Image 1: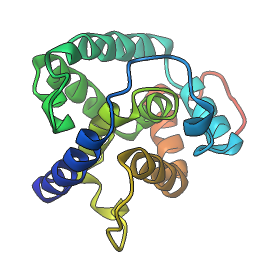
Image 2 (image 1 turned 60 degrees about the vertical axis):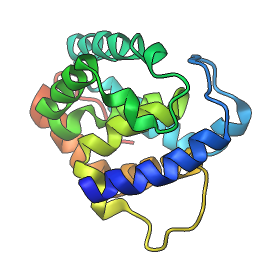
Image 3 (image 1 turned 45 degrees about the vertical axis):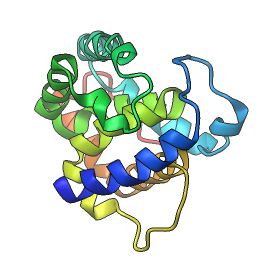
Length: 178
């Protein structure tokens, strides 16, 4: 995980310092939204709908607590600085306790808002993402890398995520798979 962290620190630091930090917003810009297909949004939405409302609420509370710490880190060259808080540690521990079953909540955040900073959470949840690193390391923006990483993870792990959700939360709703 440290190798990827160093890699992201270098890439993110360069990308982040060259672009302005986006403010938190629930609105999705058309430019960013275009990186995710309608099918991606539908898959994320479906998986997210299978997660217990109580767990989703707890996750959102922990996520919001973490975002409240971000003002302390604005202006940092490396976005990993945003992970240096007790609130982040609490959120990450909570996510890890559910494993892949909570990936859709993080996918949703990345696809909707604050992808630069929230991408750290996905990387840490996926144990550094070694299986999803690009085979070559072209210079791409962190936004693009976050989207590509999320899409690849969603594509390759969809069935495992669905099974994890079903095993964790049961089949209460008997919803059909997309």
